[in-house]
Amino acid sequence: MTGALTSATTYAPPGATRASVTAREFKDVLAHLPSGVTVLTTSGPDGTGMAGMTASAVCSLSLDPPMILACAANNSRTLTRIRTTGMLAVNLLREDQAHLARRFADPQLDQDARFAATAHHLVDGLPVLDDALAWLACTVEATYPGGDHTILTAEVRGLGLGGGPPLLWHNRTFRTLV
Image 1 (cartoon, rainbow, N blue to C red):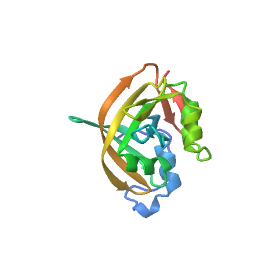
Image 2 (cartoon, one colour; image 1 turned 90 degrees about the vertical axis):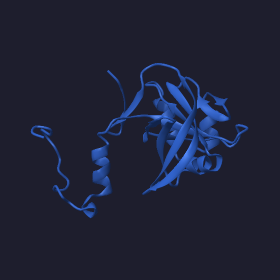
Image 3 (cartoon, rainbow, N blue to C red; image 1 turned 135 degrees about the horizontal axis):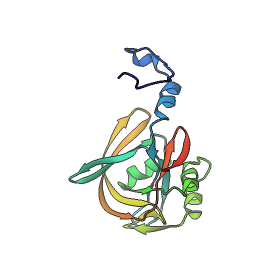
Image 4 (cartoon, helix red, strand yellow; image 1 turned 60 degrees about the horizontal axis):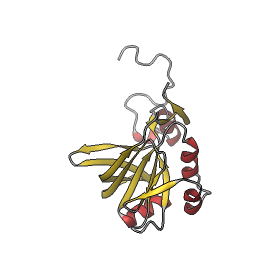
């Protein structure tokens, strides 16, 4: 890989063991991996008990059947509700919706306050954010331990596409496509 890195910070030599990589170093490196910004939401079948959280660790998993993979912190209140309901919606945010990402990431806001200040509607009992770039309504198929996070795999049961440019997360900052 000649010339792949022109100016770089090296944290550990090649062949270093896992114990030599700190959480801070790991986060510093992965902060440079851009990702889309989503809000995962869930609720009971009648639309009560809504919960939501901001997530950037979401990706497609399978085309047949259509499935996604999402990761949530083990101590997440939303993960607790997703485990109970077995359902979640993935709301892909538009470039002008960073305020929603901040709202659903704020640990000081309770779930009711998050939704009271956010326009949304129910799709099959799941809260879907109004004006989202796109959304997926999913049924959780499996959960797996992933260190301090839980990996969720879910089958897509419904979806919708709004439109507009996506909101991105890169180097600890919200960004948009140029």
